[in-house]
Image (cartoon, rainbow, N blue to C red; front, side, top):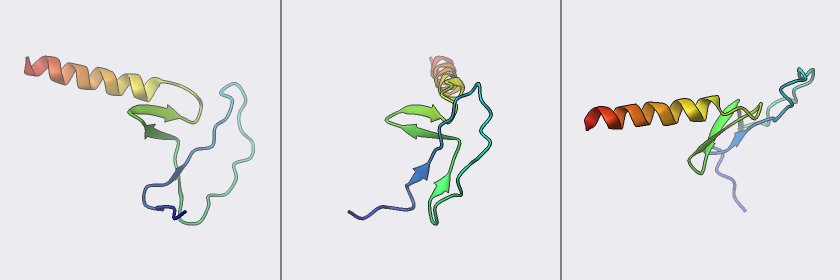
Length: 67
């Protein structure tokens, strides 16, 4: 299997109640991100839905403005 490094992202999930004291170093050629879009849903490293809700509200208000 060939991995497309241009599209590959790495998210390190952690418990939001506990501050992570160790973050592993990034893998060479793979970007480490705090959130990513997967199957039209934004996923965050702390299991929060803030970015997804903000995106839905923004798209909805833009479409409502067109009407």
